[in-house]
Amino acid sequence: MKSWKLHISPAREFSYHASRVGGDAALSRNDDIMSRPHVEFVQAQSLPWRPATFAHLGADVEVKVLSRDAETGATTAILRIPTGWRQAGAFALSADEEFFVLDGALELDGRRYGLHCYGYLPAGYERGAASSATGADILTFFSAEPSLCVRVRSASADVIPFLDAFEMPWHTDKMDPAYGESGLCWKILRRDETARDVTMLVASRPHFHPPDWRGPQERHDCVEEMFLLSGDYIGDRGLMEAGAYFWRPPGLDHGPYGSRGGNLGLFRTLGADLANNWTDDRREIDRDAARHEPIIADMATRASMRSWKAPPRY
Image (tube, rainbow, N blue to C red; front, top):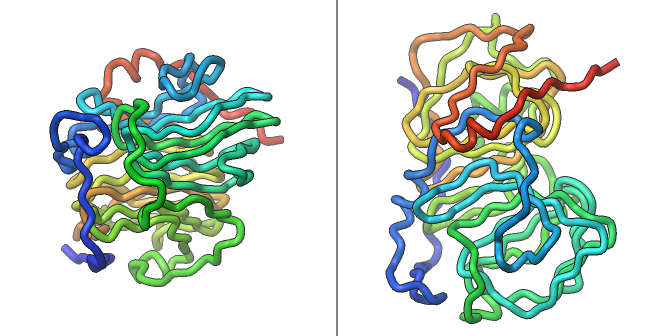
């Protein structure tokens, strides 16, 4: 088995305990991220919109829950913010929040977050007023069940208040050569050098595939999570189209992958350095694949899914 590793060298010490923001006990982060059920893959279009129950959002916000840890409340979801929505500041949450705007626009702390803008607000970070004149769909990641808490920091080296992904350059620095040579590139949105977490955009070109449509599988020591923003992925579970999502625990063989028309995905790797461990055997993928063979370990998610078919392209 061949391997490749993205090394992230620790540059500072950082620890977070729930008691800092009102909890009674320290959280074991590795347990948090490893206990979430395997999802591979679900099309977000197949999930229902439901009223959001996060206390800080107020009424009229809807949510599609893509995956959730029942023990900690850590959640990946799409929030639908209605036109004219407003939220008063100042407050802080007991969980880290990452967000990426899929559609529409959000105003927060005097900044306008439009299409493909990103932010990371750590637990206890005080935020100001928010609003949306147009409405917005926002891909959101909470590290635990978010609740209101007493502010514990007004400024932090960990906060990423604003990034416009359109203005960031594509590159292949520190990318596995097997990926870079095949035409993949990325934009790193966030890197936590202590927790070994990385959030990134990854793009592949049209007609991306292994030679002869056969390639090795890969395995990681970290959690891998992906939301497909545009395009398509062809893999061992079928055809993923824009809106596809997976949460993959460590140690699972997957792939190989290809793409008909290219793609853009938001990826997160959590809990360990990203290492590609390649199998020696080679598997075939079908460029004409239209099937979907999901692994949905969470029965509530499976029960809520409805059939979805992509609209005609022509």
